Length: 517
Image 1 (cartoon, rainbow, N blue to C red):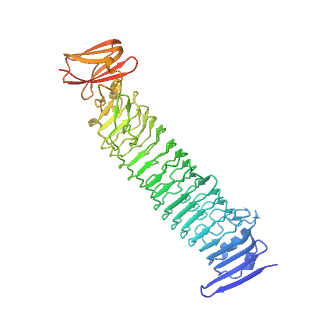
Image 2: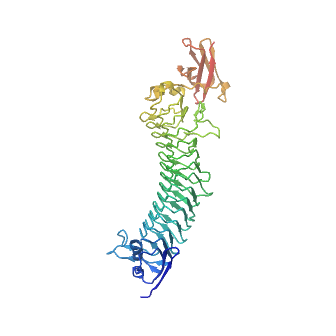
Image 3: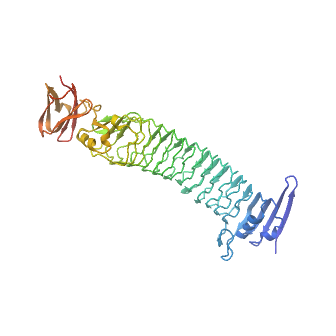
């Protein structure tokens, strides 16, 4: 057998260094007769059996140098080496090969292609790891719980990262992903790395996987490169992390944020990209410091628990016009909680948002889920634009004193809301604040005036309906003349000020505030 064996002893460091050339794979055990060694340099060819020897026998090893070694394939279905695995590929560190060892440093072969699952898991003394450019895959939990590892740079050619690859690394502070091909940050990849404060993602990251950075308490901010290809932030990706700000300015391809993605984080203000079309359940659940968020224009569904518990969001009072309901009006500086394309609001969507004074329901909403508005104890006005009363889940406004809160809607559906379960608990009326004599462009073609107690309405086209309300928005009377003139007798009405709504046959509406002498 040809072999070369050198033994060096460093008295100062009290460490023993062995340099071994292995000419026949699987024979490392026969070349090392001192299992107390702390440093080992291997050249030549090795396979899974040699890693098994290191794992089982070299319990004091703190430094392993494989730069001049070549890992060859090994297969033996009768005698598996690690975890009942029968076959081991070339250029691969086998699964669990060095799990739990006392290694402080490891130098990998230049031609390594893969580090298999849990290969270095639990190496609590491992302080650094340099990945060669040849590396294409890091397996599941490969470096999980490497508690002294402080920095990780993912090389350009890496294609696959396994679940939990660097999870629970207590001292990991810096992560840089430099991949040049489309790349997915794996599920739980950096989960519960409490010291992680700096993350640099290449523009080729397309997906941040489920739980990828969850529990990373020191991760305060995240910014994405220009021209990034990010399309998906998966469920719980940043849940319970320390994120205070995340910049989506350059995320023009982002379409999906998964459920609980940013739940229980200290995010302050969120400006989501226009490309976003899907927000999962509880995506921003209980972000107690959040003061603002702009939900996407194209969003049609407000998911369950989406903003539940976010009681610091600053919601200005909305404007309300005869033909629209907007939560915050139309100024560019404002953000809108519920926008016009929304058709459904999920269960607990705005639960315990107790700072909201006014809430507007856009015209396309067809359903509001169970306890969606429960706990909105500061609510003092609801505006409802749908002309078909939306269906409701259970206890939508639980804990809200509805009887003391006006609900304003259009005159033709006031009675519908007054008859609908849960809706009728509000003081339902037509909105008096949105009435203005000059709302219509052709207001001069419609006239409304009192002659004594008789209300006269004339128009240059057919009048479909005339409704008269008191100043509180309560419907007093209505007529459908189907002509160019209409009259209503108000002799039995109390009060001096009235609101008149005129709907023409062409659908145009005209509104007037009138004083009856």
